[in-house]
Image 1 (tube, rainbow, N blue to C red):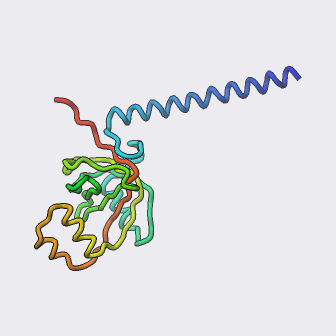
Image 2: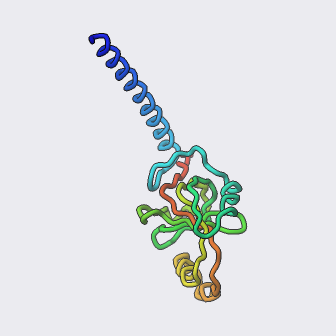
Image 3: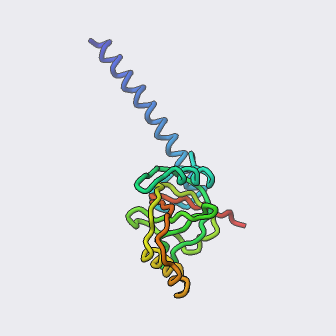
Length: 171
């Protein structure tokens, strides 16, 4: 009986030590992300990040109603100038509209031109004329530019739960 208790105790002890090592490895990865990026929203990793061309391929396979969980990196073209509640990401000939899950966080308004990593769910949708005009107004477009929006359009959309903005090196 003593041997059985000793064996069980040893198994529990060694199993517990292995889990602590994994926790320590995760903590090191999280610290590395925190040193390289300013984190908005949920903490996401900078691994398994799709390039712009890879995310465009994913979007081309989606139809309205489909979603895919991904992380990708590309340039920010535009940010909502009212409060940073959305941004448009460079996808070549088209942009992806990024919103933030539950409006839990907002982007710096001066982020346009920067490359960032966004994590969340990609999907395609059709944006109404009214919604396009609302976003154009948020972006500071002229009344003439807003009035020129007259047809719904297929949009690349993204609901982000986390964004990594590279920390700029001090000069």
